Length: 578
Figure: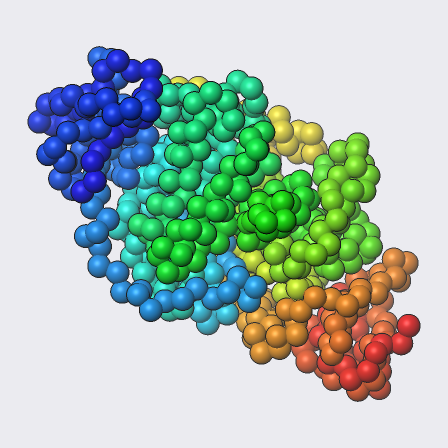
């Protein structure tokens, strides 16, 4: 095993505490302390002691089997026997991504539980799993965005070997695996990084707590902590990419932004390993510099989550206009989101009270993920309703059709493919005195602004909130759920068999008053009718119906007939009438 060490630049003495006693670490320069030989064997529990204080978990602990407050445990990554040497991840531009939460995806709530459902995802047409955070967080249940053990795999999910088994099993089925990582903040419970060094700064603040120190004194090693962590997931766990949470909260005024440094290092690691890892940002800045090559002054990331398509579509389908949804609500906004990825490209945003965004011209359209639902957009509702609980099945199928035939990389949230009835609520398992109450009251105050009464907001720390969020797999073959599942399978089969559905749009026609929209490519037209009455739309000569949702959808000549909430994908031989 490599030498065990810790960065603690202000410490005068660092000791390693194990069941066998204490051993002094040696100062190694740059604020680092290293354990002299012999190295600790695998599966040894240990803590660090700074200047005679209380024993603390390792900031780079690979495993916390007793939770965030327990001892760290050594892991021999070389001991796992991988079987994926021949696996090559499908290209991101052809991907269909499936986001899931390990704890609620199956009754088992473990990595092994996910393995038992991988064949369902393959049959559905998924190419990439996207796991919500699996690093160590407080308690047994949670979303994972309040994690503190960034290097440790959550014990309740199955620990390091459990994650490796899942990745190996996914690769055996041709599925790539992405992981959500959170570098913009840490949770408050069990967070001891600040006791080791200047990991945080008062120069900036995030919505969730102190910001990581990325550009102040001591930041070189903090950046190293982040970049080494990202590399660890790809090297030791064979992950195929990372989703970087809320990169707009990574405050860095350095000449080389952390994201640019990270992209360069991950590219170099890919060349070393012989398998490329992708980086996908979550950002609400509508800034294409995230995606532009480093040589062109960008950060060189591979793709990003873009909420604009979700928001534009959600408002049209549901009519909701509160909060940030106030910036959307027109077919023009939806057309722009479908065609460009960003709705706001330097335009005035009423919700923000200022101009927002920048033109993404020159950036491939697939680099912005598109989705009808995500963990945020469901779980950040007071009652955690999915789209299936907000609108009719026909309208939901129309929404899915527009997303899964768009040029964006489509992403589904677990259970969406069958219109799961279970909500996805915000849940926690805090034991730190007062923290659960603060989170509970904070959620109620936040949702009061949206018109929800306090009693309507479930208690995040109540185990029943978590249990309600588990998927019910018995629904798949029943009634409307089975119909919805068949629709998703048909859409994804068509996308796979007709690569033109992944091509950029040539234009999007729409009529705000009549409530119809047609997204066009040279040989295919995607048609949607959001009006309350049937209508006929001109799509072009030689029209052939490829896929349809709704009663009485038909094609005659150069026109397609759509009922209310009707949807159709039509092959065309000639340009549509203007």
